[in-house]
Image (cartoon, rainbow over all chains, first blue to last red; front, side, top):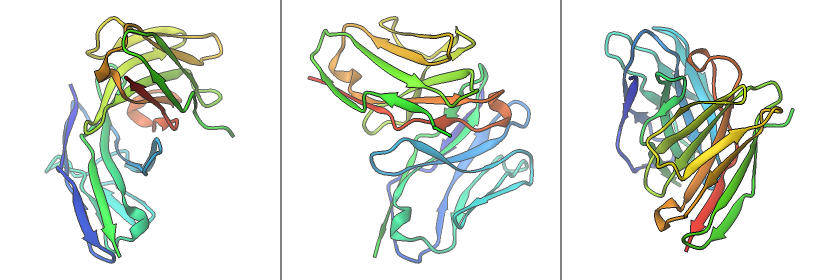
Length: 111
Length: 114
């Protein structure tokens, strides 16, 4: 079935640093790819998505490009803020129509 | 428009007891998914319901079960609770096919088994 491999955490950055969280996938066909974010004490919410190869999803300064040739969907942000501290999950639909989530990467941004 | 709602938000149970968690999907969404997020672990797929039927289940023992009602709300039941069942239980709903659309999550139910 489909799966993702996500960069292990935790990640600690200073405010305004550049962020990259790696995600690679294995998939049959070309499903949409997603990044979800989970703020402390909350459920998951969609951060961004891309529906086909070479698409770039973006939201709140975060970006990720659907790369078919490298089977990757890395999350990037040029300048992180303290409010970006959260757990980030890469995800894609799996066989059986449920979503498969990566293990999550915890990000802490310090002032 | 109301999002996915889950109840209760927190509860504490004793080992061996039974618990029922509830989820109301976004209006118009017919698919409901349950996930378990144990401390330090990622999201583990539990169950998928669509149009009142169980469509798929993850690698969990039979004491994890559930159902979906005609209004598409759903319950997750866990019998004979064990300490390792302590986790955040997340419900998500989807409009249409997962391949092309996002899953919307509730805030979760934090279950503590003592």
